[in-house]
Image (cartoon, rainbow, N blue to C red; front, top):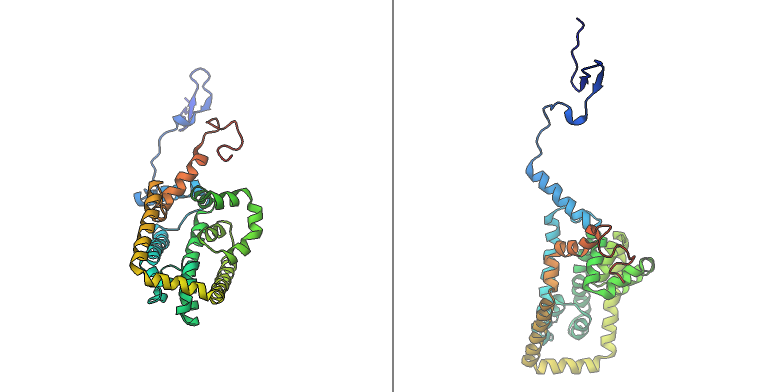
Length: 296
């Protein structure tokens, strides 16, 4: 008789004897000789997928890189609280430490008469530039997710960028130079501003800002001297009021479920939570029949 041996993956019809292929689920199991994937690598891949999904950007390359950015920002927030309380009452005795703790405009103007130009410009420039590249880096890492996060934190800046991205692309350069605060630096990174352009605008604008504030202090030196004299003559009451104001600010932020330190410490979770409704909303779910969703 002829050899009727049937190869794997096919079957012979019992009546006609014709050979037909078997479905895929009838294919014989073959041993998988590929090396197993280490569990740590699987966990890293899953974490990367979670980071990419809600933000549209890969996020920080490593948790260590993120912590090296978030950690200094939290320390700067704490230093700002310290500068607005204790060192405000002693700005005449420790003006350099005062602006190193918190280089907001009013502090720079108040400390300017007690500082020589070199100390004023060097410390003021370094302190103002310390946080700007860090927020710019967060914008690069998280992209549009950072914008949505800022929309929830500050509707004024976030909605402006969201509703007028084309206008912001043109206005970004003067904004970075004239008002390089945390929001603007974050938006600059998210908008894809190149690093050299950002650094040139940021450094040049910061030096121009310091010059303008020192000029302002010289022009209005008489009333500013009166304000400084009042603070130094009432150090203890000023210190007590400053502590109460800072404590009230922290308490009110925590009551609303946020705060600068908390938002920074849980940045990944905050951005994921802000982006999750858009990423996971089913096509037939609530709001699918209207075009703006909750944006209106």
